[in-house]
Amino acid sequence: MSTDLLPPVAPEVLAEAVEHLTARLRKKLDAAVDGCATGATPAERAADGTVTVRFGEDAVVTLRPGPGGSVDTADRAVCTCLLAPRCLHRAAALGAAPLADASAAPEPDPEADPGRPAAAAAATGAEGPGGPAATTGSTPSAGGPENPSGGAEEPLPALTAAQTAAADALWRAGAEALAAGATAAGAVVQAELLRAAHSARVAGLPRAEAATLRLVRGLRSARERSGNHRLADLAASFLELLQTAALLASGTADPAWTGTSRRTYRPGGHLRVYGLCREPVLTATGYGGVVTHLLSQDGGRHSLSDVRPGGLARAKGAGSASVVLGGAALDHAGLARGGLRIAGATVSPDGRLGAGRGVQAHPMPGIPWTEEPAAALFARPAAEAVAAQLADPDPDGAGPALLGCDVTVLGPAGEDLLVREDRPDGPVLRLRAAHPHPELPHLENLRRIASHPGLALRVLGRPDLDRAATLRPLAVGPVPGAAYTLRLPDGLLGRGDLGYDRLQGDNFPPRSSASQTPPAEPGPDPLAESPLWRAARLLESGVAGGRRAVAEAGRGPEPLAAYGPLRRAGFTTAAELAADLAAEADRRPRDAFGRLTDPSADAYAWAWLAAATHLAAARRALVAASWA
Image 1 (cartoon, rainbow, N blue to C red):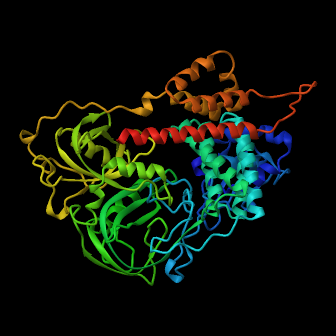
Image 2 (image 1 turned 90 degrees about the vertical axis):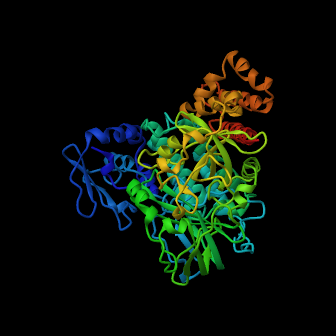
Image 3 (image 1 turned 90 degrees about the horizontal axis):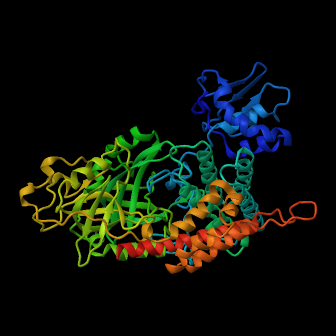
């Protein structure tokens, strides 16, 4: 059976089904879930989405989606066997089904009440800044979030006892999952995480719930050996969950760490916004669409997105879809090179514009990148902009902010493009496709540009804060005053969106006018050249194989030799934290009867969290240095 036929299941429904199993049946659950794809035969999907799964001759499980398209209550999953509903068949079918999003409610009208939540958390873990309004996972500043319209938001209430208790339960579940590792974190361990996530949701901790669901999806991908699985991503999910749970459980965290399950929109008054570029959105959860990046007269950054279920086809077609904002007769292609005059605007903390009955928008001419306020994006050295973002990463959950720079093309480097920033002692940067899907034109456009070494190029993109000197370009244009640069039609207003516009031969100058350019050579990569990979490998081995794998790596004389390069390179703290983690993993005191005297995974989780947090900070410092 293809599990793609199964409807998504609410996390709490799966957690409850596993909780009701006996200890004997829990031991069989992983095998039952794995065998569901081969041993169970579904009937054809009914018109209402109901799927029937047959286990042998006497057990038939029926999964009946609710109005939201998911199995959201226990009574929508029934089995005909005598042990139902506490049977292995029902739990296995639910465990094989994909997880439903934390909230799939339709987006409400923010103008019915400007203070209401305005965007549902439709795709937890969605990729890209213009994806569905995922549960906010931003790192709040010390003073709390601010309203982009000017004033600070109302102070958030202090954490309640129920919230700290839910966060503590989530920490314990996360610590046990980390100690088990992906190989042993089967359906039972995942169900404990989902049960804790549901408790966090009930207590009003949507950020912690979203982090947990991302972790569970990552564990599933690891166990299924999915092609999209990366140990580094799974380690990042563990880090996010443990950090969030630890801060909330302490009771001293900024209340903004609770997150919001819906994006709040505040009155923004009258705005004049100008288009910068379009970006296609394609998420791992099947959503697709477009986000158009905008800039207000005072330099404030805004966006208008149109993201819905539909995947690649939706992402490709949404670039020319009509803009749904205050009756503006404009599409996203026109808005990216035009502007809007908005009356009664509503704005979320991350700059997204809300649509509703009270908003009135009228098109107005756009501005080229050479005019203010867009020109300010290209006036600041890229190193300064990246350093500022690394110092305060993702303050509003919108992802890295856009930055612009003028560069000279050096040549290709695999699928990437090497360029040099046009300033004294400018660094060599790597331009990597923002969306590598072959049916989107990002890769094709970068290949065409790479074939013109010496080309002067103005680039607008988003820095990749996890890689050295890497920029993911969204749009390009000619450099003012340069002889060997792009030639774009007047209708494009001096820029091309790499995710929608396909650069052609006549957009490039004759090669005879190219200046002599030195051979393409990547600049130094502090991340690749540093021995931090040794600490990362230890952390990732723990994510994959659990506490036992870390303990095995820490036995014998080899750890001293492994951590020596870290100390010699000046990463003494990283070496000490890695050694402490290995020692803690191997600390399993037992009594005279061989029983563990301290079975808790807390101390091990704290040691892993300390090492992972320090590693992330060290990597950020090296990334900042690579841009200088």
